[in-house]
Length: 179
Image (tube, rainbow, N blue to C red; front, side):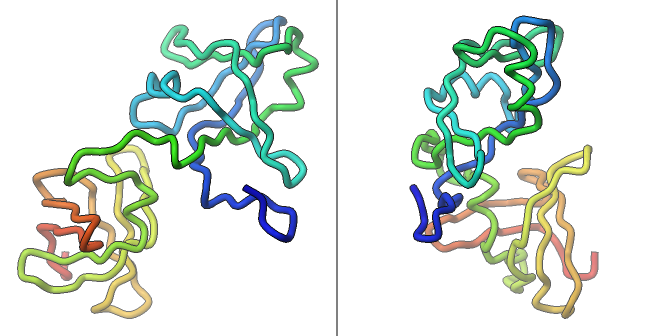
């Protein structure tokens, strides 16, 4: 999992959460989940944080929901001062441990680099990134048609995003270049 230059190969990992503020005095903290379903955090057995150019395994005693927040505790940490060193650290899982998805489904990281084609069989561009600004997920496309501009396509299934074919590296969308 390490590269030759002693930094971890982050392509093997997926950022899934971030450690937030402490909660109480017993070493608990808030955990901000980046998963579509925050309860899915409990399906993973191994978690990692990046510290001093090393991926360190983190063993959670528990991850639970409390008043619509996610609260967690790391094993062997029982006081507020000890947990503060973990503040704002990103939490990763191994990509190899992600559950298999159904056909026509993909993880965000799998969408990056995929070709985007509309119903008229026009190549709109390539997915540069996927973001969420609050209302819905947005595909940011490096446009093939208009240089140096990005197309922003809402990731709304069966309305704008018709299908995802990972084997062909193609996302079919109901979108025109001029929208």
